[in-house]
Image (cartoon, rainbow, N blue to C red; front, side):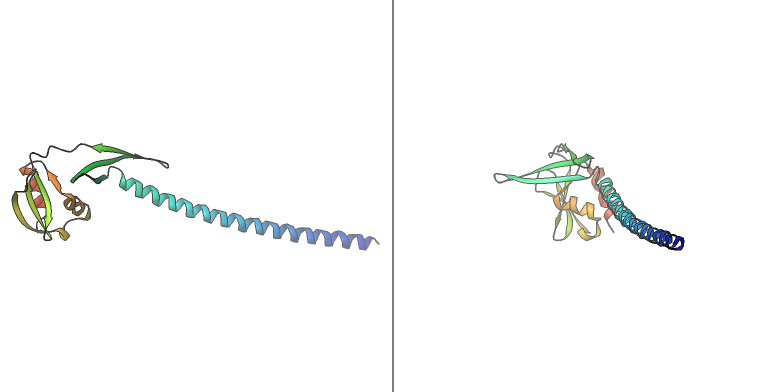
Length: 158
């Protein structure tokens, strides 16, 4: 009779330890899955932050038509958060002086600002410029004076 009780207690302990082992292995697998999910979310958050950090102080140009006239508004991203982005409107420089670089037939052409008078034809292809500069030139890149113009042309001519 005592042997039966000892065997019964032994079987109970074996079942108890097996059940506890299975429960703990299940908990460990759940925790492992949760840790993997958190690591993936953290990696995604790092990518988003690095993308936003690269975007800070980036210029944005919004265009709209007022009647027949195209109006350009320049904005700069000054701050960002998880639920908002702060843009500061940049004031247009006086268009009466300076130079405007545009693309014509795939190459850069320099105009006197405020007029349609060609100041200089260049042989600089649009594709030879970095992508950021290509965007600026496609929208019309303003340069304040002759020094800025020649520095720009010197930097990007072959």
